[in-house]
Length: 372
Image (cartoon, rainbow, N blue to C red; front, side, top):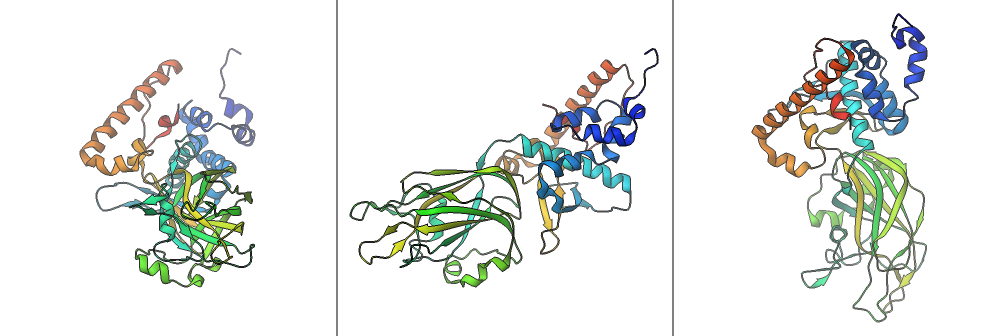
């Protein structure tokens, strides 16, 4: 007891890795890396932050490398040289430490950016899938909704395809509001029997802006073989009710690639004038958090392997991308200096309690920002 010994050195590397891998709170791992230089080196060299991220979000196994973007406002210069093992490990530690914090502590917002496609549309463009982006059932004094074509078979499914706000989004819920035809006799509600959600990425470029183009694309252009679906939800029953119905996923899902497919399974309502079954949707919401601009992905192949792009300069304002774009370089410089000074004071306090001397802090080391 008279001679203090380093815990990691005492129990050995393998046992220390097993013990630290039992930590469940990302902040605990960050605190461990702040104990001393040797502990920090141990956490980084053994890839413990990356390992925790993989355990909590298996989808991150698709990241084959980390690209650290050094500057957001000048032409992008990224660090891609993996020749130094030490540099690669430190880069991964910085990126995965902040990524796991973003995936476990966040505010929720609507993550849909655009409506891409509907498997059928009754009257285009008046009943386009674009109408589901608006929460109101009326727009410019007319009804606003998407309607499928009529079908004699009540089991006939429909598909709606959306682009999310970022290629990396953490999704917790999807909300769907069936449309009630207040202009038809009896005010029928054209809901589906059930709904299911798929998330993934496209194998081809889907940069489609023209409304006319969307209306006349062949269904085969958006068939399943054009996508890689990395997640499929359970089926959720849908009520024939004029309300925003909330479908919570069994666990938060990291969508890599930014594509959501809403599968509407089965029909319950016929239209009086033709006796056919229809599905009509007023509004779709995707609840979660887009991780851009701090994180982005660069797709490598059709199997979904990709590079994780990490921009440390943008970590101060991840929850508000709109404000980020308006901040400007001068605001960035001021906030970055303020953040660095806070980290320096935190380190001085830690050193005081340890009785240690000054400790140099890396320019892009955001470990201490992760402590709540």
